[in-house]
Amino acid sequence: MKTPARVSLAIFVWIAVLVGPVLFPVRCPAQQVPADRESAYEVIRDVVYGHAGKRPLHLDLYRPKHPKAERLPVVVWIHGGGWRAGSKSSGKAILPRFVRTGRYVGAAVEYRLTTEATWPAQVHDCKAAIRWLRANAARYGIDPRRIGVIGGSAGGHLAALLGTSGGVASLEGECGFPGHSSRVQAVVDFCGPTDLVSIDQQKLLPPVRQLLVDFLGGPVKEKRSQAQAASPANYITRDDPPVLIVHGTQDSIVPFQQAELFHRKLKAGGVECYLYRIQGADHGIGGPHLFQECLRFFDKCLWGKPSRFEDRTIPKEKQ
Image (cartoon, rainbow, N blue to C red):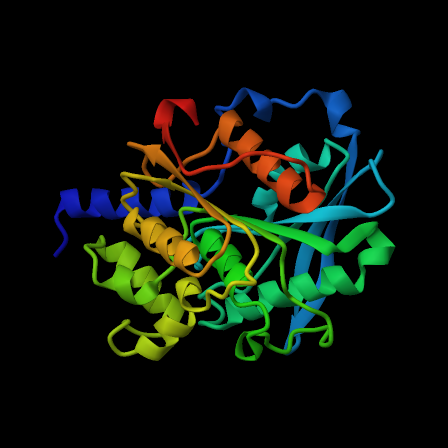
């Protein structure tokens, strides 16, 4: 029987998992958007980008009304929620900030959750979304050569996996638009797990460990090959796109060691990579400063704007 303390702890963990990955939260002044700035972009909701059997898969497109060029890079938001919860609607708190600059199209992707399907359905869906964006680039004013992805927690994991597994046929799936590449050109990973075998060997709270079980379809010790196949750190090659990793050093959901391991392996593999350590921060991180850093990173990678990056330690109060 669970004690009240254990019940409270479980509730806290679930709240942290589901809410924490929402980057740049309401407390940030930039979240308060004047009405006239809302008119700077349009949202096309529930666009079908593929099918998993008979089940349609959707994304929301955010487009600037005054684009800076005929074809723009696209920033793709992949939501968190422990692969079990969350939705593409969380993109409305993040993508407009990129789109209002006039330099980006935004896309918020729906993928099948573990209540519906286990691994590798989630990455199959995300790769299908990237292929759809390329196949429909001309229609929506997108430059198919410039696609960046950003995600938090489980979404950070999937964003990182898109970055390192380009060209891995076994992860492509059959959800739509074969013949188009699912490679991306820039990755921002907020607090994502990157090695599912090693994270299972760390001290995890029971509800967090259960998320791994639900994702893989069983405990890691019984699903080791699936855990290895689902780990972004296992696909690193020199031609991977630049990666910005942002992680709290006191993350109680996804241990900070996951960021360190991924960063170390990317560097060893010759991939351009930067680690932002948010000193003392837990799983839910974000704020105006970090948004500006993400924008600067995408400007560098997708627009070629000169900008200097390096590994950094940032106090949590200066996010």
